[in-house]
Image (cartoon, rainbow over all chains, first blue to last red; front, side, top):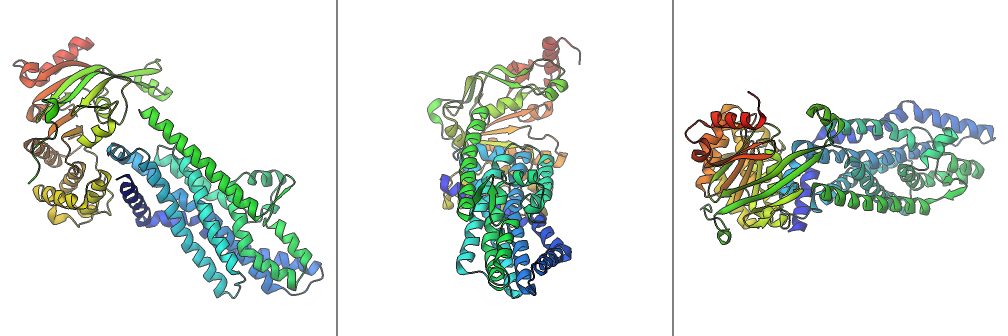
Length: 302
Length: 269
């Protein structure tokens, strides 16, 4: 009975989220802003800057490789933002149900206490994966249509793995945080603040290397930075290899750290494997905290 | 046919028995200001005891903040009493909350329906939450939708239903699992007269179906019209309890209530 109730409740939550077109649109606002800013001026600034640097190194040409690199960087930023903002918006159902008293109806049904919070979590993950998959497909189409497809099969699977892990991680974290919210107003405030700053904090608008050292240090403690790091690695390393092979290996190496394909965590280099491990650890930590919070809430309510 | 038999013949006529229920809440600073008190805790329900009988409508009558909703929430297992216990169909709300939930339907006058779903979907959804088999659920839907005139609107989106029909859907969805006891918090609160009539007719219909009903209200006419027994709650304590005739002793319910209120609070209303 609990399994079927979990399935029905998850489906219901997902339907509510997907049927609210405005909510789906706003969940993709941050990635869309990244895209619009890039198309309007950020892309050109990045490309011109990198080509200028190459010129300074005595390397001529390379416009195609640099354009592919910058496009991949922008798309990685869009994906990383989507992995955070879509689950956040999907968490809104938890608040709606609380505000409208539906939580009480669900609590009063004879299903086990864990079913309702588990269904919220499952629907947030499902929403994140479904919309994230669409965004990822759009990214692939973008790269293919613009003739900049430099991804290997391993990169494609890497992107899918990064999507799954990132959505699970941000869902555990966000379900935990939103669990403390009571009112729609407070949740909307969180949504606006996070939607606004997330692009900066994970280096989607401009590379983290451009920020002051103190801000760079802060970003090392944001799980979204590791999400962005993974997507950059899988989406950009083909373009980076082209730059290394056709233009300058030293320049490619510089780009790798400048555009946060690897992190320097206070002297220790954080590569792809470590990024996966960090995200997995955060997911486990917040999954545990969610279970603890649900237990304590259950005890408080009696 | 709809079930008119209630599945609790093994514990006599008392479908609800509250024994010395007590519940206190911690007050935030804001709540302290609103309550005009310096005390960090508020006693919402203070040693409340009463019984509700099978097939009857029992009304908890009291002013706002008297502890009616808190009492119903304890009986519905939404919150646990600090002390005391209550038994619904013989099951303890403290020790057997799951069994209590099987036996009750908890309703409020608030509409909690997403407007892009249909009555049919919502009925199926809440049926699944109560563990009903598909065939049993389909039969129950046919019966209830037919009885309350929802069948023609079963596949119409909630946003396209009239207010009265919306209220009916909300109420029918709450009894999807055929509960023996229906608990209804402020059934007509904030409703216009036509929708309020839908609700009161629904309650009368439930009683005719053999359901036992426990409701809270501050509306005298509702108690006089529907209830077989009434409990008057003031400041979390039971001030009077019995059949309407016993409690009122020939006076109107309104006069009786204010006489009791003056006697306890010492103020003229």
